[in-house]
Length: 165
Image (cartoon, rainbow, N blue to C red; front, side):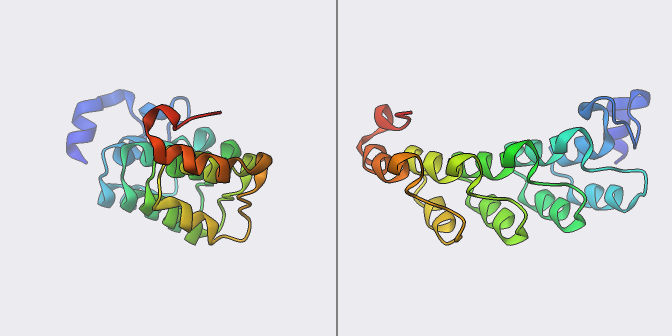
């Protein structure tokens, strides 16, 4: 904690909602400091859902599954905001542990945006993510004229065929 505050100094406030990079919670999530995140979530001044759940998306992009688990357990951060971007990013990037966390939480909708998650994870060739998504009854692999099914054979051919849409 001391290093974060010494680095970012007086411009950072615990409850800053004006810009996500100025938040103590954002910085702790971004750097994967799980214990600091836990302490900050316990503080009543912290709103992990501020700025359209920027924290969830950045936590996924930085690859901190333990931090995402804390944010989801806390319950205030909403993984469905920004059209379910959290599950879309996780599936598209092949982040199995993040997809598992989001599906287990139950709030993220893997079928949102015309089944974006299954279409992209399949097109890019993330074979470990596809069965997780298919296990959810909300997912429809036939969406968008069977796109997920059509692109699965293209993804196996190599990188130049990976994003046909």
